[in-house]
Image (tube, rainbow, N blue to C red; front, side, top):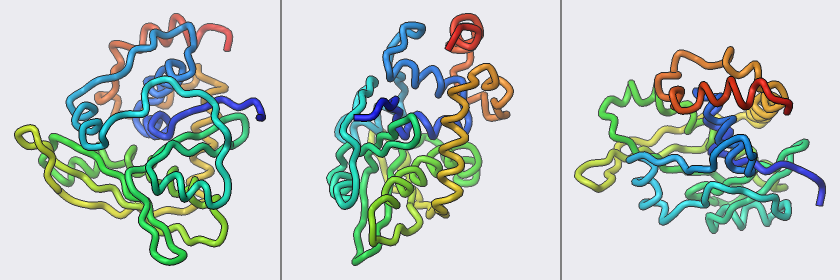
Length: 223
């Protein structure tokens, strides 16, 4: 098996808003000694794990790369699927893959406590949209199928339960998605640039937990 570094789709998508946090999360995934491997937790994560009947865990290891129809079959069974791209192996498992003849569509579910659809679309949806685009890109490696625009199903948390709120169809283009994936992965080679990329959405990132460690122990060390 070729030497590649595994990374989760859920980590890649966090570069949409929180590149420093995502970078550190990836180091935890691969067991880098410079970070403490403690899983993130929140009400949203706990609710999501209950609805998804579990989680795939923090640590990731390289697995046999999937190819051809096996990609589709594993994703249909919500099994972790692996696609090698350059020196990385992208791993992920969407919630659902709908097959209609030769067409396939990814559907992924998110839970939230937000009550404004416009605010959710502006501040919360972009990382989720990036994630389903990555899943769709993975499916695009299956021959002789058409990958339709993926969908994100958003559920509101109410009194300990999750109820349907709205569904958003996400525009998918394979070339654009691949370019964005490559851009994110290229940032791992130049982590000192990450602070400059933090957008105004950084109020949603755990900067107090990560910033000092990033500057002192990671960005300034030899990578």
